Image (cartoon, rainbow over all chains, first blue to last red):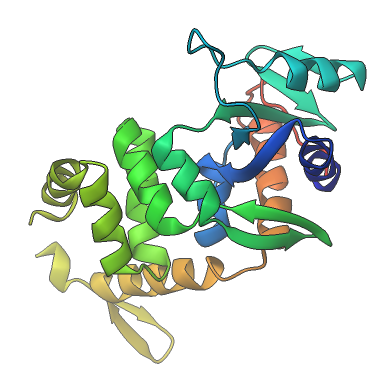
Length: 171
Length: 63
């Protein structure tokens, strides 16, 4: 894990990405009790957003990782023994990266998406496993309700949150 | 009624609800563990899923 984070930091240092943050289950696990998961989701902001046709080009990143000997396993790229999924960030994810918490893992600097953005991202994804994480975040860590509300409203997720609360807590 | 069932542990008399509340409190406490500690637990869970849960496609992280 530590070495995988070092490699991600290298991508930033080499200018292949502008910024990144840990998202998905591992970010949730930063704020909740430990639970089983398999992969490390990384959201990235690219130096160059998209080409003139609107295509997001991740090839330089993958070429760099390939040149370092990292291989594909299904949809993951295995970085230092950790299966990693790399997602180019959309507007909500970009904001989440910007506001992510700076953290250290065994002395290696990294960024982890905060619970309020994670809740919005999981709600938007909306699968059962995502909604279970929303519930864990709401119940196990401190949530800035005002910030959460403003994120949900800004990204049109109010209704999804109301549905979730009704389904989960009957209110 | 299931909710009124009492459980005696030594001197303590607990309701089922007390056990659930205790479990929730323990969860919130585990949520405060350091990130590194949680990742170690995750790797144990991956090992457990691989061996005990017979999920041979589980990748056990190198940490």
